[in-house]
Amino acid sequence: MTSFNCFILALFAALMFSGIDVSVAARRLQQLPTLPKTGLPPLPQPMIPTLPQPGSLPPFPGIPNLPSAPKVTLPPLPSFPLIPTIPTTIPSIPFLSPPPSTTSP
Image 1 (cartoon, helix red, strand yellow):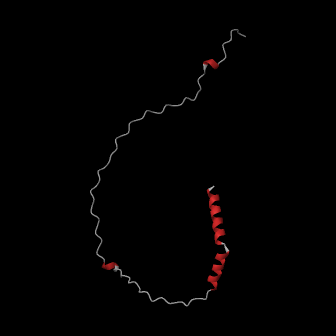
Image 2: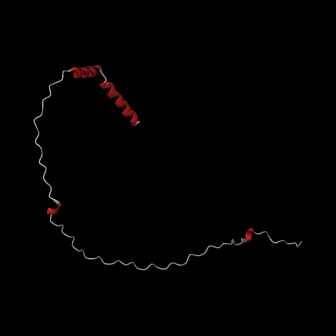
Image 3: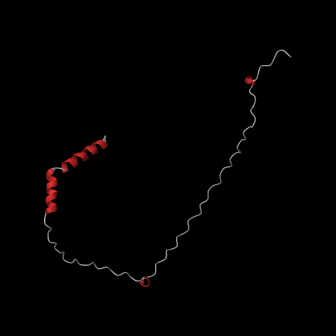
């Protein structure tokens, strides 16, 4: 909905600026005689400071020695129990087995 409102606003602006008065004014501006160009007075050039030569700079002061940080030690991790093994055989489930036969063959 917002894009539709923007489209309507753009269309309205285009119609407003495409009127006859605007086009006539633009044509008159194009048909004006060219005005003589007046030269600008010369502008002063800024002074660029000279940079010091590499050998003339004083030596860079060294970084002072910082005290060493204390060594951080972590407590030992607790021992974990061994991971139990997964059984590879499926145990028999009693209620899925067939009932015992009462007669012998």
